[in-house]
Image 1: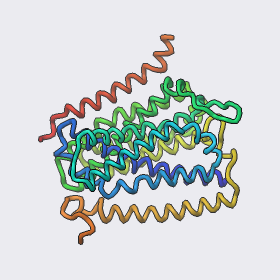
Image 2: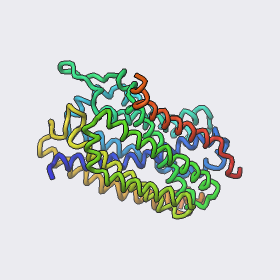
Image 3: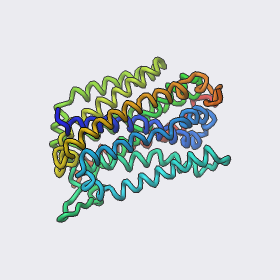
Image 4: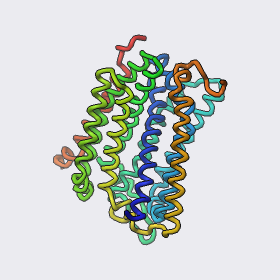
Length: 342
Length: 34
């Protein structure tokens, strides 16, 4: 295995971690606002707040690791994606700032403003939608080289059905992943009404999620036939992913094994995400950039791999402690202990 | 032109409608006791 492949594998792992943790966070925030619109805030508010309080500061660690890593391992990505993503990434950062400000003012301030809650809820959908544009751009056809400069063709991007398909998948996935996890979490907390409502949301979003995933495969056939052909080479991974999807929906439908349902969802996304990544190989940006173009020097690569594995080994026990002390602490989940007060 | 629309955009519109329907159904769901 070459250093390039090890590097991109480590980064893909961090990106997968971010997608799962951030989806739960974004979706929980959205459901918090959505339950207000649906007049069900009294059912969901408590369980969502108990989940979000200890988690919201951790989520972006994965994203920071990914960005540092991709520029460290593949410096040329900064040249291609840096200017191209100036607007979409800036929008994401502004939305992240709005989200952070809501947490800060809501947690440390005393007042609750409904319009702020709605804006916060919407950021839970708009951030993944704006970040998902990276995946669309990586499929090629949207970036033009003009001499030394690269430019993004916004007209083509907004008119592309692939682009909107990926946006739809990002939104539906966020809601589906989040609803499945929160169903399990509400079940652990013994909150039957919240569990029942979230289970309905999870089942409701399972269909649109699968439809939008299939839609992307369909659109790839026309937009990027090379990637589409490569995807068929790993079709078995997509089939396994679908089986895990069926298992999740089955357990949710039967109102049993909510923990197993969430683990099946993790495997579903892992298989689909890695199938996508493997079939994308070796391109970082079709057809301009592969992982072998302008890879960093060997010393830097080794240092980065060691640093990333060490970082991962630090992050995993931290997450484990967070889960033991807060998320899955029976007393905390049930609202009998606030944490840190003995 | 029409054929291009049907091939490229019609499936997208169907999935987009399913997303809108899911949002709407979640808002209208009254089966959980308040």
